[in-house]
Image: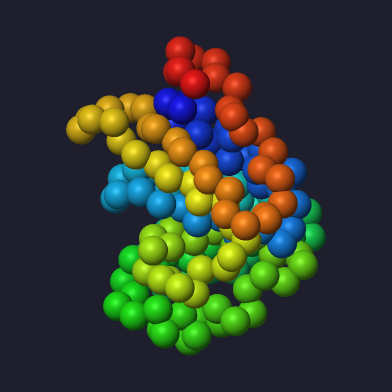
Length: 157
């Protein structure tokens, strides 16, 4: 599916407002594909009003939301080995009230949870203002509300 950044943000806000927990979203894609845009939109949908900086250098930020959901946003880009995840509290992820968003999940290797959504974002061509979104259910995560996105500005499904 092809979406604009605004459509991607609207979908992320729907996810943040309605997604059942526990849920793990693996956000895949190259630099600049929109992973952080989607993560921030999920945070807004969950009721966060504070800024959600990219966790590129901190690796992990945790937020308590008005929904009663703990939103965990991780960026594994700087990890050199999956074993480094244990220092970030990886073993504590998946609690009943958690929504976990992980950028660069491929760095987790075999430690990725068996039940998750893989959301892949791609820029179709350099300089493009749209994104190609592919969603894959892995295992048995909770349903993903609002997908496919209802397109309103000329995207194609």
